[in-house]
Length: 430
Image: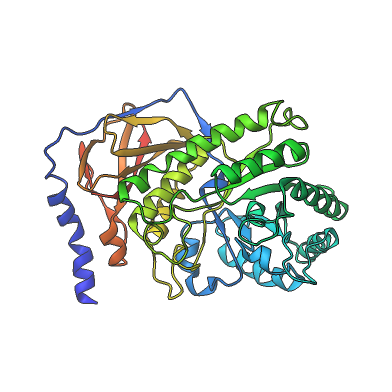
């Protein structure tokens, strides 16, 4: 314990030494104060949650990211298990454990669509019963997401009858059944598995046939399998920009959305992580996976997505902010930094391509998130006209390995951002 405390006490001195080494000219920041984008809270702190997660054992860490939305039951669990009254009891308890503000996290509930075996409760009347069960627990459901990854029913589950048109018919039937229980309910889908050609084709055909009734168009983002180089993996975050743009255009086009192009349907990414291979920790439980997750979240919020849910909140193979033993992963630190990106987004750029930058104004405070994607420290000039730097914290891979607190930065005209770090700077408007 003494050594641990000594190590932590030495961080400011160590930081003072490290932050003066870089020889390159400091990057300069340029803030556009004329433009503002509201940052949806249901993007910054959204997660997939399932009843298998031992929330009570990691309550302190999980509350530290201030969850704002939970998607339940999360992933394939919703396709493989019935949604019954018993499922909502632990959900309600854990919602209370995870509540950090005056309201609990918003709730998105997946209905069961794929049956797979006789007796599966995936009929419209079962969806209606789920709505009644949620009401019995006094749960407010922001969206009912109809099924999960239906584009894979014919591919991975061997049932070729699951076309986009059949899914659309099922969407309509379950929607109508739930509306009889809750006339104000809203509905999300199709929650396709990724954005490859097959999934995009499925989503596009769904929009053509069901664009008039979907309230939130949803898809998933898993750009790698964990085997790419770190640099390639980090650069894959560009899929966020591409997909938000093309799916917005898809919805707004009369040709591709003949039934609903006038509705301006919101967008949602209800699962995302750098890698889809749950059993492979690389690029899920490491620093690269955390930096990608933070950047993907910030981009989703800035580009107008209304709902996002990272996969996953806790202990789902290599996914999750903490593991089953309660040991923090880099993603926990990343979302602890992200929770402060609230208010209105302000465009922020620099002349250093290795830095990912985001800014949010809330009252007199401006929060800046700076990710150094390089494998060496990069200097940054902290000057922002009209603002005074009042605080800064960062974390690196070493911070996580030692289960340490964020590194408090010495404030000055120039800071060296550590290699592969995510730094939060706080400014006060003068």
